[in-house]
Amino acid sequence: MAKAKKFKRVDRSKPYLNILDVLVKEKTFLAIIIIGIILAGIASGYAQAGMWLGFFFAAYATVANDSIQSLGTFIESNKAKRWWVLWLFVGSIFLLTVSFSWVVFDGDVTYQRLLSPDGTSKYPHPEQFSFWQIIAPLVLLILTRMRMPVSTTFLILSVFSADTSGITSVVWKSWSGYIMAFILSFLVWYFSYNMIKKYFKSRKAHGAWTAVQWIVSGTLWAVWVMQDGANIAVFLPRQQSLFQFIIFAITIFFGLGVLFYLRGDRIQKVVSEKVRISDIRAATLVDLTYVILLIYKLFISTVPMSTTWVFLGVIGGREIAISLARTKKGKKHRKKAGKMIFRDFAYAMAGLFVSVALAAAANPGIREEIARAISNLF
Picture (spheres, rainbow, N blue to C red):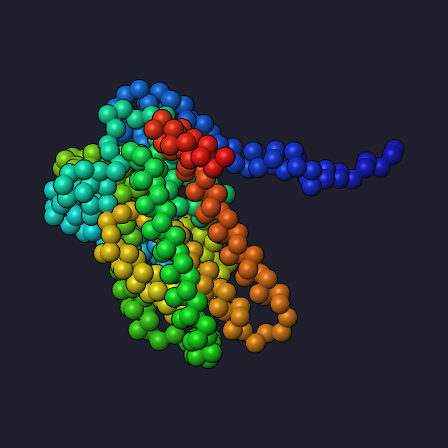
């Protein structure tokens, strides 16, 4: 009897086979996205249904995507802690932060990021939600699943902008934030690298570092909520009733619980792959640089800003500084850092282009302004 041939796996290097592998592996996630798109198509004709469906999509998508910037280093450097301890700490800060804004600003939970003191808004609350507005968070979920650190602010707020000024003001503020973050982070890590290497690498962290990090991380999280809470609240009325506020707060509170249970999920890799970021002292220094810039940007203007771009600037400046300051021979580590920063920046730019496309699809006025701008170039 002839001996059966040993099974040989088919070569998976062919593009179409790789795509099939991804589809099989991600079948549950794809099913959720497809169901979400179908529900968005149904709800787009109804004001209340569209509002709440879009809000629930945005609540999870925003928290999941932005975990890398506001909570990523905190999660990475506290792997040994129980997930529910981290959740209760961060969740309590969230509830206190949004409650303060809701009381002080008469129902506005965004610290006037969406509603000016005179009652006007560049991001008006629609009477009926369009299909593109509702699926914007789903697009964010897809990009998050691909580990792309795109700007939540661009992707979601752009589809609510009344005109292009609501987009350009956010872009310019975010660009300046990225440049400032990159430069500040580079200077901090380049000129202090030898001291940091000497004390951080050879000595075990003192117990006091844990308290310092939790204070810095808690402050960072509160400031992030003040800046980016608008990305979730944009689906709800600019001045929320008590019932709406309770749903808003409870939904995000338990969404944070899911995030910590999953330890940041896939997007966490953007932080985990950075050099020695799991060291609590390095994580604290990164968060301190980040929170200083966010506080500065928070008080100079109420214009919403992409905190993702500021975070990428902080991380990018740090990686480049370390690669240049290291005495290690060869250029391999420098090339690796350069490729990593370029990839993160390219993903962020891709998210910006997707955001503009969604905004044009959702708003005829923006579509016409973009068309005029393009025609003027030629």
